[in-house]
Structures are given as C-alpha cells and as structure tokens.
Image (cartoon, rainbow, N blue to C red; front, side):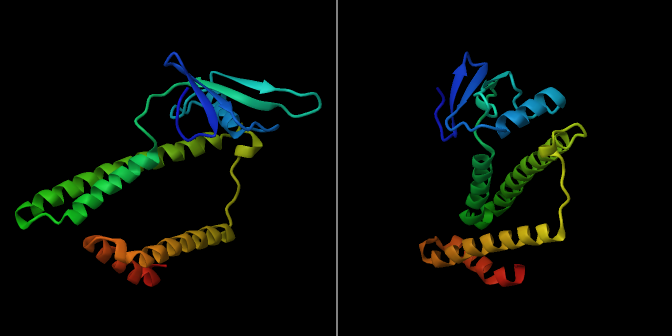
Length: 199
C-alpha cells in the first residue's frame, strides 16, 4: 500500500503497476477514468500514466460505477506544488540572506541560476499543460472535453476572484507583519503598500 494524502487507496504491484481503489465511488462518469481512457486510447499524449485496466460495478437499472483503475507506476520525486515551493524558498533564502559585499556577486549569480531553473520548470509545465488541452480538445473527444467559448464576463469573474484572493492574502500578511523577520517584514510591507496600485 502507498501512503499519502489521497482520495483513493493505492497499491503498488511489483513496482510496475499501481491499482487505485476509489474510497467513495459514485455511479456515472468518473473523471479519473474518462481522462485516462481517452488519453490512452485516442491520443498520443505521453505525459500522463496510461490506463492498463479498470473495474466497474454495474447494478441493474443504474449507471456503471468505476471502483478501481490500474495504471503504470511512474517513479517521481514529489509533486509539482512542493517542487515550486522548494524553488521559491531557495530564492527567498538567497534574497533575505543579504551576503556581505565580497560575496554579493556570487549571491546575484546564484539568484539568477535559481530563478532560471524555476522559470524553466514553469515553462515546461505550461507547455505540457497546453499540449494536454490540445489533446483533450481533439475533434473526436467526448462532449465533456470539447472547448467552450470564454466570454468577457468569464474573464472578469476570474480576474475578480484572483484579486479578491490576493487581497485576502495580503490582508492576512499585513496582520502578521510583526511575526516576520526584518528583511521579510520590509518586503511584505512594501507589497501591501503597493497593492492598491497593482490591483
């Protein structure tokens, strides 16, 4: 069994396959199955695990219920969110480390190096995400995957949501300024002060 915070119970089989049993299966479409099945059987998208098999329950008079998936096991070193946070933390450590003048050039070089690595990773993530959307929007895709037009109202609503969430984070950051170290406190205070001109 694999440990970790998941919405399913996962078993590693011989280091080659992973069986995922859904803890709360429901009748009808299962996104994990639908997406994996479509990408495996109808596209050449290589950046997600394929689908080796699945288990469904079919009760009389009801929609089928996907209760388990079998997929190739892909070794990894963690999730993207943790990787991005580690990259940002490394950048922050260089920024707030305030190296003495003799080492300022080395600090600047390390900052550029870390920033370049993080941007390369984000660029790769954006490229792969774009390729995934293209694969899911194929002409023979199921109706649920087909693109839908985005209206100006959609964009306005998303923008408002991002602004509201950012303002909430900055409000909380301002409330906690006294708990931060001096370099971080100055940076956060400057960001909070500039927020009205950025929003």
